[in-house]
View 1 (cartoon, helix red, strand yellow):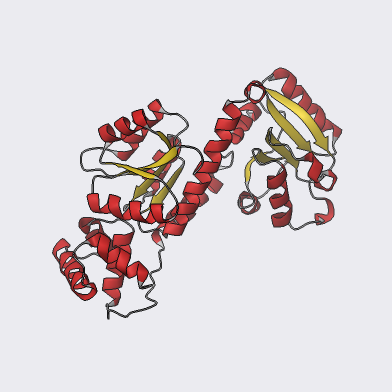
View 2 (tube, one colour):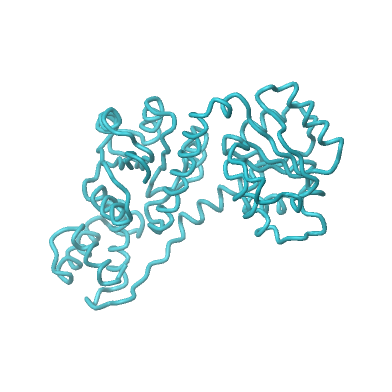
Length: 355
């Protein structure tokens, strides 16, 4: 993590805080912790927080409301909501209020680390833009299109919207060279019929190259009459929006959203993305590579859940068993591993390759 910025964990379960803290610090993240809103606000007074993990369901507070308070203190802080109860409604609420990401407590820790890395990259780019007056005044556009009508439409748009400026036009992506690298481009517009004529490059290769050349740009397809299935495929390559008619009044709203990292897609496509997100949150495979302590499969699952920071009641809900049964399983785990705490159990299980 660059500079003096920290990662902040907000959860009112001490064992969960400790488990997350161990995992994150093992991966090089300097971590501070807070049990709720008041503790978190005190931390923000003393430290620069880059990314904050907030438990959705605190005992006496709502995680989304806590997030709103954090945003009032630092609008650039990146918040990742963590929950043992992922639902469509809470995911939508989190996205609407600008939360950076939303993840289940049972998700693979590697996924959480990737999300934290993404949050740091986005925050770094935003800080760089904020410190550059030229980028604040103008949002630079690069157009990849060989149609004069489209170029004229974008030029007219920029005249009517002075915050945007068309800085360069390419007939197709094949004309873009390494020397054209530009970290100041806010929006890359790609014409459906021109950007990759005769499919000269595989889309994955092409978009990877474009992202490396214009690292801070939001990508949008123009003159695009894609099907929802095609749009979904292009979203996987980092495209954030689809503009079917560049003359529409909604174009500025679309550009504003895309340059902020948000999506401009149909309701059907956005619903599919949310459904896929929730499916990923719910599908977590457990492993048991070295059963040297003769743990049962259920006990390994319990260990994995503890490593993810779940409390006893959350584990009982996850596996549809009573909280008392959870306690019995945990006592058996402690006895087999010869440990006295959840943290010791998780550390020992990780060292043995059980989880």
